[in-house]
Length: 75
Image 1 (tube, helix red, strand yellow):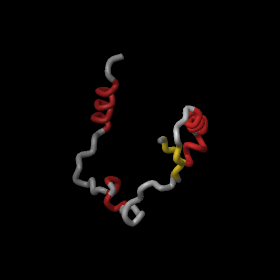
Image 2 (cartoon, rainbow, N blue to C red):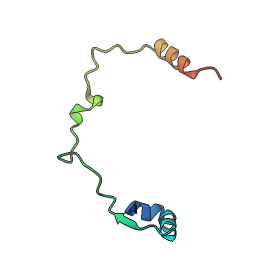
Image 3 (spheres, one colour):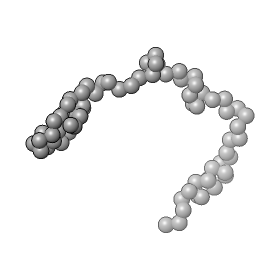
Image 4 (cartoon, rainbow, N blue to C red):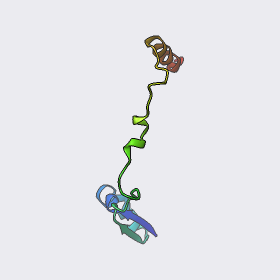
């Protein structure tokens, strides 16, 4: 048995029809059943974006240029 979502029906209807035509049973489930955090909210204060970086080493312009050059590789 195949499972399709509402999103599949909207965007991949031909695929779902091909399953049906080949004799597959298809169950359609709501696509808004995505798991959400326990409270449904994100605690952004725990995000790395808010980490204190005041004691971290910042690259100089020369170090940044050197880093970019090292990732270019040889083509």
